[in-house]
Structure formats: C-alpha cells, structure tokens
Image (cartoon, rainbow, N blue to C red; front, side, top):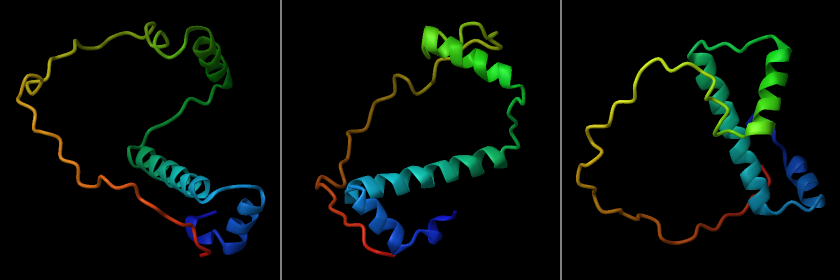
Length: 108
C-alpha cells in the first residue's frame, strides 16, 4: 500500500484505537523512511543472503553479545584513516527553528 492510499477511514480507525496525532504522524514518518531505505538499497543493487540459518545465527549472536561485539568476528580490510577535518575549527551551531512544531493529522 502506498502512502497516497491512506484514507480518512484509516486515520479514523487509528484514532478509535487510541492513536494520537503524534503517533499517527510518527507512523507515517517511519513508513516513509523504510520506503526510502528500500529504494536506496535497491538502487545500490545490494543483495541479502537467502540462507535462513545465517539469520538465526546472527540473531543468537546479537541476543548473546549485543551490537557492539557483533562485528568483532569479521575481518578488517583496511585501517581507519583519521579525518583531515577532525581538528578543524567548528562553526557555531545555528538554530533555525527554536519553536516546537505543532501539527495535526487531518483526513486525507
């Protein structure tokens, strides 16, 4: 289902289940992000392993060791090179929107 296929009835059903405007907004934002990720991965012509056992093994390793240790078994192909910009003078942060954004989800 594409984003343009979300109807007013869909939003009404979400509200009837207790969803707030913020929760509906966040749901749409998350769905849009995953759409972008899918297109990005497809555009790079990436692939995913088809062996289900590999995913089970990785899942067990993540459950046991967490994400920090999950890549230590992988070979390293190159040394990390320090960024030439690491010690560059930083520009002061510029805040363009200091006001909290208010929004409302309306029927489409």
